[in-house]
Length: 179
Image (tube, rainbow, N blue to C red; front, side, top):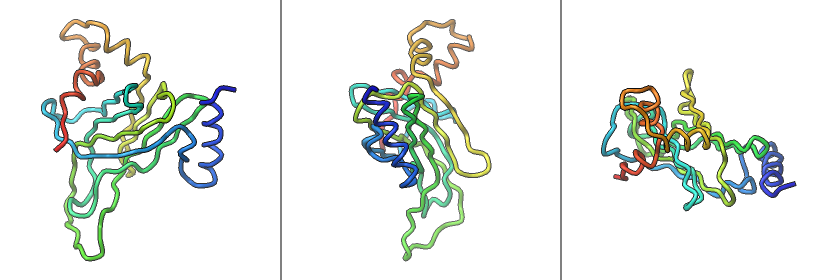
């Protein structure tokens, strides 16, 4: 049995008992930060970047999250399935409210960059779920399909070129910076 499958099995057993993925699954940490894209500001599906050098999967997306004074975008859960070599990241509105702060009744949205770090190899498939309400948005990215799409030249007005434009992180995620 390879190490990754063994660790994934252990994590599944631990997750069933703890209600979340343990660090033994290969996931070694997570973070979310607010970012301001330098270009391509229109709403689009989240972009997934596989960063082998950093041992991380990065997700750039845009999501509504509730009250601007009391909530924020956060990672609700990460689930790694070692048999399928797949990661699921669920992003949801998280409370940052303190008891001394009154919340505004507005609905806010922001660009975010979520990072999931791995102690071992990166997964081959990542599913991003944005929102925990009635209509969550889901996007699944397969690493090998993404690599093929992003390393090929496409006619400028083709469907493949449009898909590559919203999918290829080395061209677009790098153009985003933190605030």
